[in-house]
Length: 191
Image 1 (cartoon, helix red, strand yellow):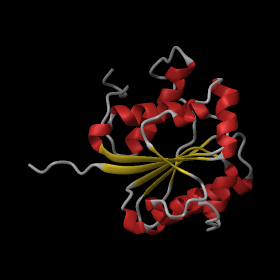
Image 2 (cartoon, rainbow, N blue to C red; image 1 turned 135 degrees about the horizontal axis):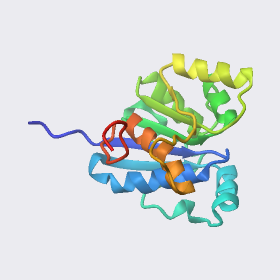
Image 3 (cartoon, one colour; image 1 turned 90 degrees about the vertical axis):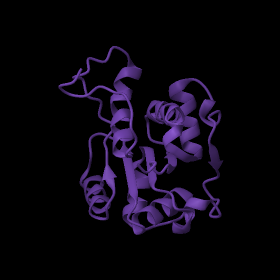
Image 4 (cartoon, rainbow, N blue to C red; image 1 turned 120 degrees about the horizontal axis):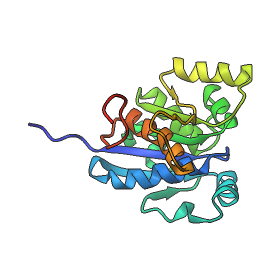
């Protein structure tokens, strides 16, 4: 029996509302480290401000992961040779989504997304905006056609969440499943 290959994951945090999703995702990924070789994080300045506003702390840089500045094009995931399997943009602002859909690689996040798509690896964009305008929808279509996954930050309720964290975790659990990681979570028809 062969051992499962560990994943190399980059998490990008942009300035859309929804810092709770990023916080819970990083926490869960660290609990799943037996399946992960490396977790790298890029966080925008706007994301830091939104995190502080929404979560009342500056703990975005207190996770045991590798952090990279958004202008550091020497980061290993700025090239396909870095062999990162998965990129999760959480939350994914519509500006970031639009730049990726247009092929604009003007920072490390958009460059890494471009690399992930060109290498046919897994790009998961956790979009957090409502309502969508036609530009948003067309950009989501473009990224989907290029092989990306659009996962709106829309909580589910069949697990009967009791807290905001429970609701946000319904999205985070879906993202972890999409990334191909094994986890214990609510499963329809089994709980």
